[in-house]
Length: 360
Image (cartoon, rainbow, N blue to C red; front, side, top):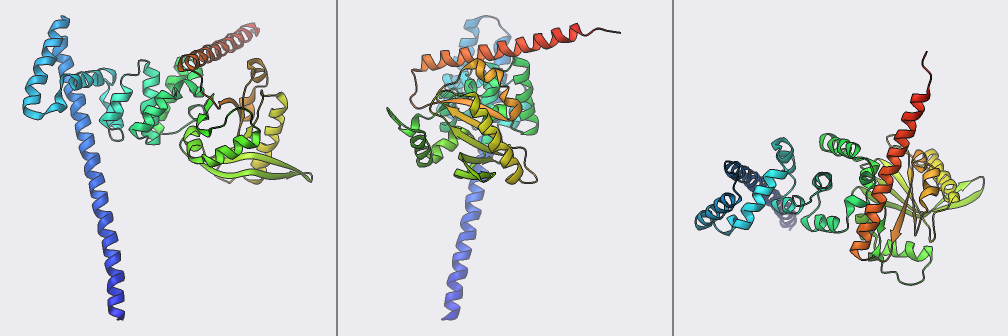
């Protein structure tokens, strides 16, 4: 009887191990096939592009693609339709550097690339490619991120072009996320399902009910730690609305929810939270905690004068109901233009001060 029991246990262990081996092998084969196909499509696109460049006539290019498609479909099937060949050509054109694309195609599928290559702005395209690689987005998640205008909502999009390029290149080289690649403004919280009148507690309750969705909106690497985290200073009790940790940034994140506009007093409150967390909760290998004040509105000059980033504090609006896409696009476009103009003004002011320094 005992031998039968041991045999049954061994059988379960054996089945589990064999299943794991089969699953790992299948995944490995799938990755290898995907990498091979994506590499093939890039090389086919590049080869067709070179052929088309031999003749400047547009009709020549059209004829080449059409003829080649008919021949390939007879031999290899619908995967080489004229439409797909044009995808391949565009793929090779926008990702001309093989050293860059060879890193990406180990993580991204052909379906990922078809979503990314039609982003017209090169910074936006590189942002989605690298974030998709780092955070391992599914194709569905990538589409959702693009649809929600993630790039335009991140802090990095508010910077001048050369700084955006520097951060994206650093991400590509070192796989290191920065706060400007993680934090957004605004945060889209329409999934909470809150309508009409509500209190801060209602938002907090809804976030916990939809925690998985909220974590997706926050970004990869976040884990939930506490709600209404109690801290005590001089026998006075204070409560942090929500506390998270981001393993990629190696920081605690305190979130304070506000119904109205951001107020200067909110900065002092958040600074107290961050200093307490830094003193009592921060672990040895962690970076200083950061704070995010989520409010329904904010006044630009108030936020600018407080120089919040020097304190590790971010302020962002949240949207319970999404406006029409055109209105959101215009709002984000205006915010980006204003932020870049402020950066240029600060740069010019600093340059002017340096020019005023007398030389000896």
